[in-house]
Length: 510
Image 1 (cartoon, one colour):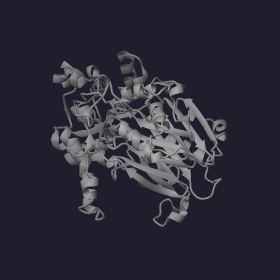
Image 2 (cartoon, one colour; image 1 turned 45 degrees about the vertical axis):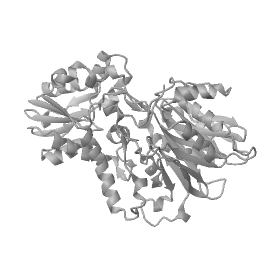
Image 3 (cartoon, helix red, strand yellow; image 1 turned 90 degrees about the vertical axis):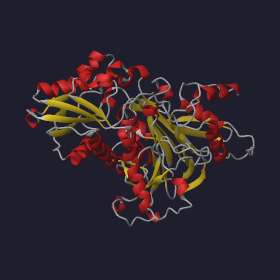
Image 4 (cartoon, one colour; image 1 turned 180 degrees about the vertical axis):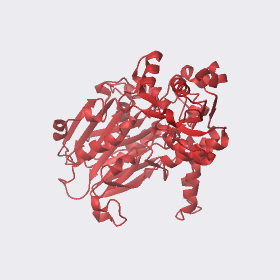
């Protein structure tokens, strides 16, 4: 919960759709794109944009962008002008670079020597400053402060070996990946195809789904001939709402071409020798929706394992286990299962109070939290409560909740946090407060229980978090007989824990 209250947020979500079969398509691509964005709304609420194409040569592009939620940005009239698209990409934004203005809203569309391209980007380039200078030295002006426009201009740049009459998009994308190692998942739309790209470290998520008839959505009998379209998304949670089945992840460093003919892997750009993948571990902890699938495992299941591991590492004498609604609920259930304590609800959430992190000062933020919850007194009066939360970032928001519970009759409140303390900023697409604002770096952290008014506070260790995440991946690999011993090197597992340890997967450039 405190991630939300402290303004820690994922930068954005990307989504794309290509209708299969004959064009013009019967698939309502604009509606699929809109519903896909709605399902990714948790990844960004500042702005949203859709670009569709009829896929002709030359193609006709239609664009609509707006500030705020998807439901605000896209009216029925706006969707009408997108209705002739046979393919399209879209984006919802929570800015970490670039100010919150319509000009920074994605996807970006630019003219190249060979026609228009549209680009949607999730992540943050670790060497953006140096790249910005390089692009400007080539005489290219940048109209926004967004990394995503920078990526678009780099893709528009013609590689030295390219033939003048036909763009080599694999070469252009590889050139971009050579220029910047991380962090990005990209969708690039050109004419009648979408290229889905993930950086070599796989820091940001990206997966592919197959649109099938509703009658075959939950059956195993849907063959390739039943495919109505292909979709690509930051998270698989968007697939169910549009009638798509999960197909596979885009691998770290992979360039995938998606067209009306299907999905084709074009290339995989390797990491420097010895480097492990660096998928952001906080996608599991908080950012992703719990029904999304990463690395073959459901996020909800991983969060439950984190709770069980937390119960092993940080047991306590108590009567009941509960949670701060609702992102920490799976971890609380896991803690209860492992500890043998009953799980109950102690807080009732008012869902019609706005996100309190947008309020400008500490006093208003605390009032927002107090307005957001009511105590379910009958469930815990006279009892010792273990309260599971997903984080304590600044320490401002958990304190009034503890006070609320104690005033309502809890004899003790023990805080258990299903993630390690955040000590370092993220430079790869997550909006984390400055190092000085993080409670783990303040003197008060030495007695954090006293500081927030709890009877005790303990966090999950970094080792415990990594173990909980990787346990499921190892189990899947053991079961997957398709992975031969010669092929196992390509399935190596690694996660970015830089905000916890200060160990970044690549050298930062400023």
